[in-house]
Image (cartoon, rainbow, N blue to C red; front, top):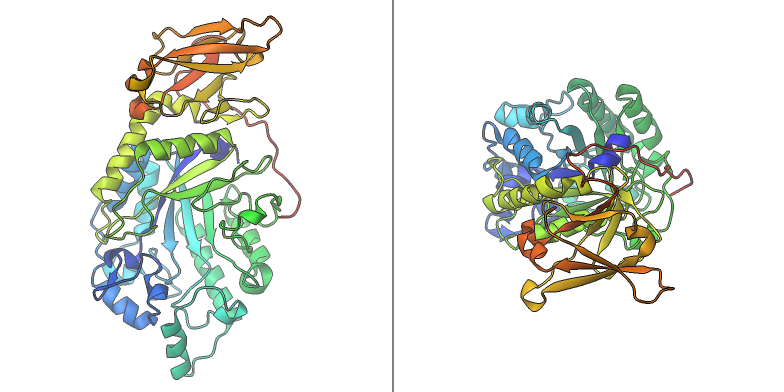
Length: 456
């Protein structure tokens, strides 16, 4: 887990047959990667329409990897197969795949692009499959399934056979892990209710096969019934037999998961896959603050983009990534390899962490500079005393430090010129409290926390 804990920041890519539809099926809005389910389409109707608009441009995976690297990401995760069952890789188990439709193995292209840019390779793989006739959704009636597909199978008298489907699932995963060299992450999606674990996916055997084929691989826990939405499970510890880390979705847990590995998966807009109506994007500053919060709480951020049907990243999403990257070039040393620093009170809006070289980093909230000339920050004396206080990228700015007038007080006041906010990339400065010079580059320390071992 060391490299992953140090990396802190990854790029999620939702790309598949649904991408070309862009949220519309014959003029009817229906979401993005869930459009088949949202409009209750049978797989034949859905695939005929979606295939018309699926046309990945040459070099699109290179664009993804280049943007990830520019943004400061250290790893990527690509949807090799989403719930619609369409595989982006060369599979011998089905004709419902990109090589049969467009003559290209997009997973191979993606892996090669990742390696050219020094990024760790991650595969998302859905254990749900709306295309395969043997997949049995009745194990958990609440688990998503298109009503039109259910009716198609009923009319044709096609029975369900989950054992047959599980063999298919395992065979496809075996292809993925045996065809592309080292794979760092397998990001499962997802289980619910009784559709989990041994009963639904023969999960223990699947996990064991993955570890035998890729001894260094790490996996999330979504082969078991936790999709990331249920905040009531936040205090339950992770069973490492069920996965290496947990994945809160579109949220950051209030207290993180102390002693556990976790990764918040977030979207730039609202949708995961491309949707032409999803134009209200989060600002770079909002996403940077999410990355800071994850870092301070001991987690990672997996930020999602949704390329269009031709594989190109919408220009507005690409611009957000580039602006995040500009901030990371100045402040990345406070992110990579940093760990929580618990038990130290900081003012509301500030985040605190321990940096890679033992320095203390403080992530400042936005400030309206025109309203103040100086910002006062009160900190415990033990945090500040004996340390040099600097602003990353603005080390020449004078920061005034004074002990509280009360002789028995154990606090120190740090006075920050408001100009550091106007000079900071995206208006988000980072303070570094160190015994020497401010950190340069992005070395990664050995993490100090141990993984939990009790049941999730």
